[in-house]
Length: 299
Image (cartoon, rainbow, N blue to C red; front, side, top):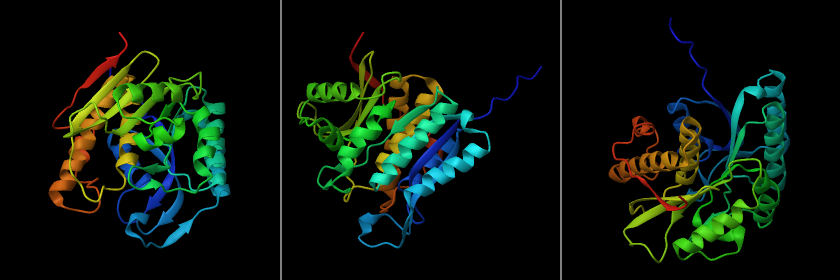
């Protein structure tokens, strides 16, 4: 007898959208779909292109629109089938509250749902690029609801008030951040774009810290100047997807970073301003080169 086909896991993704290029939902939805997930996307903005170009057209949607769309999905009676919520750039105080409200509505229907928050606030070189009030609002409202946080090194320092120069600094800051997250969840902190003094200069690392240990994945540093927008959105989606599939943070870290490296290698080879998200589609589930995750803390 043929085994029944299991339906895919549903993920609610609340992020920005661009028509040209790949940031926000335009960077996260497709990789998740290629990994086999159904994605219910809610767009907080719709722009012609990302703001790194200096000019764009489009509009920012009112925070009430997020709640309205979540309500429409809820009316279909399917929120209990939502396995995870993913959020990225939140451009206003109202949007932060709307995202947290959506997480709470999903959890009311499915207490096992996982919330992955990418606390988009800034980056090395650019500094804080969101409204001045947003970092404290994200820390106060979104972080305590999060099961998975995916800050880059700059955002980790901003959220914890700690400078990260070494691996131990990163571990200590990540543990501090873990203590502010939802206590009933897995409490996973994924630190991306980690550059530390006690590591070779020709690579870039991503660190994941949980209650059972910490793992580090290192890939060669691909010099992309300017840095490509959307890579943080893509890695958050890839890590969440692989974690939901395997339940292993070490495996999810290894596969997500390997897939991102393949994506950036294609982008570098093409010499394009936008990440080659579609061209790299076969490599999200099966990266051609796999970089292992080294356990650096725990048994």
